[in-house]
Image (tube, rainbow, N blue to C red; front, side, top):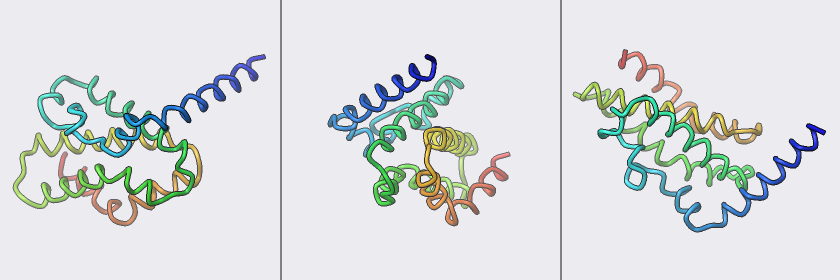
Length: 153
């Protein structure tokens, strides 16, 4: 009986996700997940609210990624487009650490980016989606990440 209840939950959830992805507001969120539209993604005073804001970032990206995966398939261009705000954050962090930077600001960005990536990775559920994330990270950011963590500690 438990098995059938789980199957039913999955089917209902997937059906709801399929409908949600068609809503304009959801499509907007998938294309515009930046601090301009979602202030808790920024490094302003929201960071000082504590770990709850960081957990929100992880949850936010888990939910967004699940919505993305409904119709993504193996479309790497669509995945790259989704990852564009995170690409911008990585590039900004790299520039910050290669110049004079405010340590607190850089740490906030790094922690936020890490939580965002955790949320994305948590939502991935196929070999193709994990491969797209790996291809996005490697080789550009695989060298950058350890350096950023080393400098920030």
